[in-house]
View: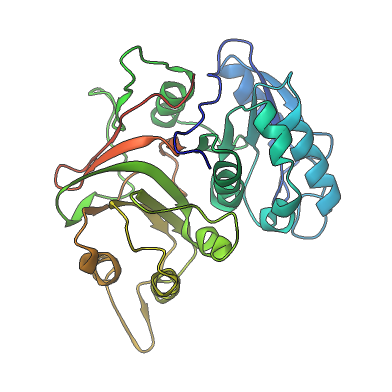
Length: 319
């Protein structure tokens, strides 16, 4: 990965956006239709992957089918962006066959979250191209999410800054969770992360990102607190947390905090692993499996003010 991230071209009116399903299957017949309609509503031309509606058990088609759609979209110079229709499971099965060289010759925004984390981080680590942890195409996009999506993917600031990842004054902060300070302070570094489960899946592989000096952001769904504890312990044992500049925790939705043996708070678990590092940590940012979510550029310089509950993007994410 180059020391300075490579910015993909910005989206603009009429951009051709490939809609692909490289992981889990689309559960409803009109998921593809909704994705295409959302593209058009945003001013883009949808290009639906040939196998996007396929199903193979808990996967959106066989590995070869999903890979064909994904590589075709990543390397096609007439495609301006790749937008995943859903997460689910299975991206890790085909990551080692992604055409990274072809993508590097024709870089473009790649958007998704959850299981798509392995693709976002794989592309970043292998090509240095900034990717985007944001909404999937099959789900409705509330005004809050749409504003952030547009701001990050279409805006090139002459001053090189997009400002803070926060809503306009007239837009309410999402109520899915209140941001809390785990440890105060300010940190700067490249913004890297995604779904904790998938980040752990990449540990020990060549696709795991270099987190030294980074602001790590995390989210997950359906993982009980003891499981989150275990994954963070694994990353700590690997030494992956050593050298972090700061941590911005998103939402851990559908999480149980207790078992029959007792319970802990998420803040306690986070402090266990990040407190000894003496770095700024805040939790509750609108990142993850929630309706109102940010589109987070992966790989750009950012500033975390854990005391003020702000996450600032210090440079444009698109060119």
